[in-house]
Every structure is written in C-alpha cells, then in structure tokens.
Length: 330
Image 1 (cartoon, rainbow, N blue to C red):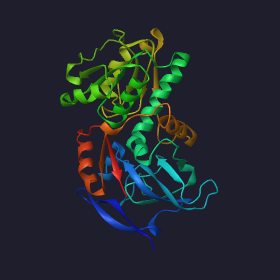
Image 2: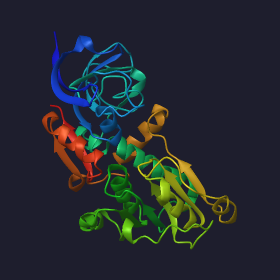
Image 3: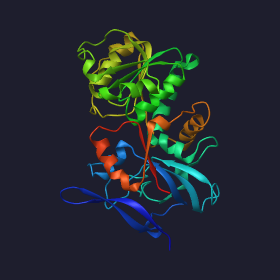
Image 4: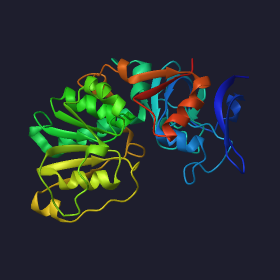
C-alpha cells in the first residue's frame, strides 16, 4: 500500500481549511499514468481552488495544483513506461481531479508530455502554467507579426511582477523587444529592471484612462493579464498593426473598447488559453523553453515545501506574490 502526503482543502460553512494529510494512492481517480510528483508550482487558479472560490472546484475535500512534473510509477499506456519523466499542466488537474499539491497524481496519458532534454524538473515548474501562458502569448505575437518577429519592437507587459507577467517580460527582453513593465508595486522597480525591463511604469502614474476611442500610438505589442481599464488603455495605445495577447482578468472580466483600433490601425486582440489547448501546442512551448527560449529563472523563483504553501496561497490572493513559487514535493 503506497501512501503519500498532500495539501488538502476542506470546505466548511465559514471558510476553506487547508491541512497536510496522508493519503493512499488507491484514493486517486482512475487514469493511465500514476506519477510520483517531484515539483509543482503555485498559480492564481490554485489559490482560488484552495480557498473555495465559487465556480472553480465543485467537490471538496480536494487537492489543488494545476501543474506537476515527475516520474511515472505505473503506466497502462504504450506511449509511456515506468521511469519516464513527464509534465502535466491544465485540463482538469487540480480543478476536480486531485492535483500537483500531492506527492502522487493519476491522470489520462493524453494530459502528459515528456519532459524535454535541456529542461530540469525544477525549471519546468518554475515556469509551470504561468510560463506556458507567457510562452503562448509571445508565440501568438510572433505568429501575428510573421517574418518580422518581436525583435526591435516596443512592448508592454501588465501585472509584470506576477508569474505570467514576469516570464513574458524576460522572454520578450531575450527576444530583443524593448519592454515597458506595468506594476502597482513601487518596491519592485529594481526587480523588474533586473528581469530586463527597459522602463517601469507604476499603475498610479499611468494617465487617466482616456474615454476616447483611440489615443497616441506608443507600443507595438502587449501581453496583458489584467483586462479591465489596463486592457482598455493598451488597445487605444497600440501602433498601426500592433497586437495584445490577453490571458487574465485580475482587473475584472470586462473592458471598454470600440471598433476604431481594429479598423483604423489594424490592431488585434489575441486570446490565450493555456488549459484546454491540444497537448501538441503545450509540448511545442516546453521544447522552446528547453532551447531557444532558455531562461535563467533563479532570481524569479522562491522554493517552498508543502508546509510553506498555505502562506504563499494567502499572499497570491492578496496580490502580494512576486515571481514564481516552486513547490518541492520530494
């Protein structure tokens, strides 16, 4: 009988209570692959699930964690064998399927992609879904621009101290884009400059959001995790032919816009889904991060064990997370 430790969220009438519990692998859902998890990561969606926010996870008690990397312990699928190292992100992992905040997961083979050569287990989870989302955003912008690519452009990244924003900033800078970082954290200006920002603008210093349909052309490209007023500002501030890749809603689920940026400047709003996309697209991003897009993630990453995870969940819910949280389950 194989037992393991997991962070479990239990829903009560007043709140969700988090605790580390011992579980048996026989309690895991059916699936092709039993995976011994070495690392996971903390994303905002994990914090929403852990805290019991409506519409995220249906059934409790529950083990969150939408990311996991580890070694296959048992496989009933011919594509994988015992000892293979794989990455699992998104789909239903950590939502209604026991997730990566446990030392074992069991999932369908269709959710798993081999860990690429050139990317360590800890590096893959320092990236996690946040890195995957940032990579998909940058790839969408590259594809949109075609042969021009993103080099020698002026770009802007909102939520730049968070997981998606910080990795998007690093990646765009690596690809020779001049990046403006937007943040509400004055004390993190030096941190963002160190990641590669050419300019850091505090949210409080942004001009009042213009309620006119189109404004001054400033940026060629944008990566937005906020939506709301920030996305409104970005769409009115793009240069002709510019585009924004949007993947989040921390500023709210709606924003104001008009048709004018799209028909007068040929601008585009590119939606990014990193959860339900085909596995082949996820694998392409992981391969890029293992080679052409290789990043030094040391300054970006804080490592914690299961014992330290509850404190980090509180931080991310309060908007105080900086960089990435790597969860060590070994």
